[in-house]
Length: 614
Image 1 (tube, rainbow, N blue to C red):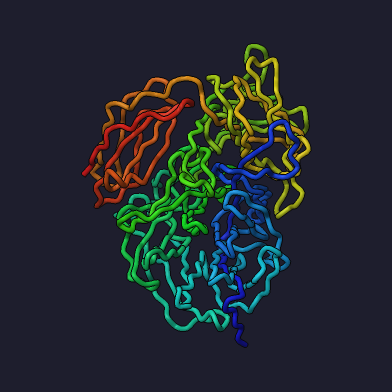
Image 2 (cartoon, rainbow, N blue to C red; image 1 turned 90 degrees about the vertical axis):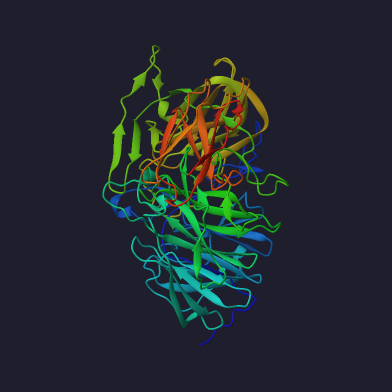
């Protein structure tokens, strides 16, 4: 039986699993919030109501996750599909997202979804977790109304559907450390049945491309083959940009690369400025297995997966970066200061760029109400995760301390002894500043939830103080109905403070727990000076490079930038405290240019002189 979907249907693809969440902005000062306020900035990881995973439930591992996003524009609005989320999110502006629970869906959610809007018809092809592909289609996704068709594929992982302007339809897929990304042609007018054209397209070349090497920081003691997965296709100016993820979703160097072709079937050539989406440093890492969507105003955006890997290796979050094509046709994203506040998608000139607010809370002195445990984790490779339970520390007055809440590490966390209004966190900032925004990264500690649950809430108060004695309420979500595991809250006006205090009311789970309490704004001091004595040494293995520089007084950290020419410094790596760094992410046969800048709570220094490395 033939099903003709033409201009009135909906299209997506799914086959892998993971979890996700998005981020938005604007919170009313001194006002009870029952619904999430509309935001005009955002902060990665995105602040959305991520779903608890059924995966690993047999091991009693309860955690939220969001990964493998597929985002499309449909009739002027946007829809985001995420691995094993039991539904999807809708937005009018790419910044504020609301979950839609569909009328028909897959029992365990869909894996690695892909979506395609063909001439304002939306067709969704979703694979269940077993890897069998059935098409769900709809002309009204906002209402959650879907119609299924019979299964047409099997054993497909990380698939991507692409319909060209001529109506010819292509399915890309692959998730392996051995096998390549493949493509086959489908008939969109006959249940997307295969029509016989099938090709192998691209595979990893770790001996040439350092960023494709498996492991944290692209190093693993035994495994040398990275995973190639998450194919995605973007057509721009007549060229076909085949995107792919490597080397593994749990690592800080998870990234998306690009091959460019003149046809959906190739041949494809490796883009010299790869990877095109890369965020290895800072608070939350990773920018791989994503999808590129074109906004109605013509601006491109790349939504991708970030590693959290605190409760489990597959614990992830979502991110969003502005994406561009330069005059040479190179595709790249802006990920610099990628987990700091950024202008929203509708900003007229700087959409997606860092908005200038810096981190006020870094290494702030933290006191907490109680402490069931404080944990530090480190992901060194796929098999070896170091877990250290830290001893309880107290100050001279007997107050419990918790440095893990301001260390810019999502894998460290603190767990209170209960989940009630007697639990609190107080930060004394290193230096006084104007607070503009706050990001609360809650931690799931033995929550006992293993599926999508509606009605979850994060309820709390946030206060500020100049002297630690007189407090002013700046955020009141004490009666909130908002489920915000990565709550991003922007104040209506900045507040000058030395202290910030969070008072819990209730959050999901038996215990109130948090991984990071981040305060953004601007300090009243001086920016750090320009970095001096920047030295770059490329190793005998030309995929590796060591960098060093003099310590800059009053700097929190440094942002390294590099690229294939002085005007194409598309990559960045943000690090704190240290004045040296070792990277394994260069392409062997490519020359590079490097520069570095320092930063603190007051702003960012001038860039150093751009240096050429052959």
